[in-house]
Image 1 (tube, rainbow, N blue to C red):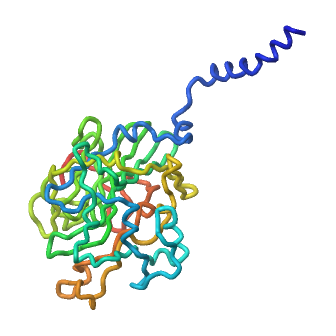
Image 2 (cartoon, rainbow, N blue to C red; image 1 turned 30 degrees about the vertical axis):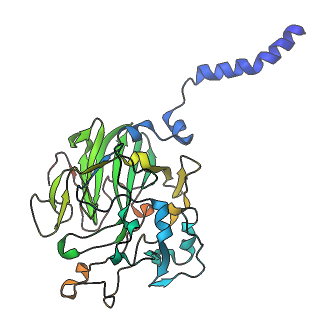
Image 3 (cartoon, helix red, strand yellow; image 1 turned 135 degrees about the horizontal axis):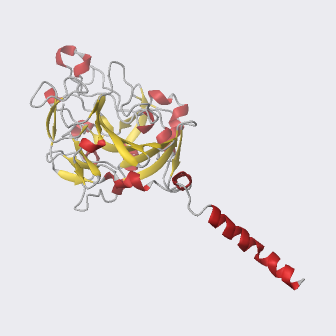
Length: 344
């Protein structure tokens, strides 16, 4: 009896030992489901060069809401929660959310200081500001897309002072196969460019991105970018130009929220339970509505709408086609070209 009793006491240890032998290591998928960002998403995270003359740096996502009020057709939304935070922003979806604009409480032509954002320090971090969101979509069978979203409070247009949206979202997306990067997307204005990972400029394993002066469009090379024809960047000056150089180096990984995205349920989960998720579900616009012609701040060349000085603020990360088929988002009239060399 004593022998049997001792065996019963040891039985749980025996079962546990058998499980360890049968399943010695957890799989990468189990690790991701266990709320851990895959290591390779960090290993290959882009580094971003900000332009040496850009006055508008990456901005804190949450602090931005302090300086905005939700409006529809330039009228404040009734009954919105105050204060508006990253934890309740999605409540605006019930108030005709797609028509809501997070509108500046200040006249932006007076250059309020909050538009300036936070300049990265010598460690390439924006201390005290979270201005990036990294979103992981595990598509199964070893395929994974990682989105690196970058937020700034203000854009300014280079040519004829065009295109000043208040608040801006740009991004890189890296497509992984079995933990190895294969293709990288660079968002630029209404579309962008895609490249093979192997052809890109890198610092170690990390691909380099260049944020254009003022517009914050993301490019794979430094220099002048004539983007008159979307998806093609001609060398030298053209009609519509962006400019990139190695001004200030920013490491978005150091100032980011981290999320997983489930395409089946269209749901976001925070890798850290302290990270807010409600803001990712907001379907409205981050920024002011395009000012009407009657607004003295607005200007259009020859009355042409496409030349408006102040344009609509962008939609947020949830509207960036997080479950896209190709590395490029789908856009009418555009073809997804994945370049294997750094050229136009």
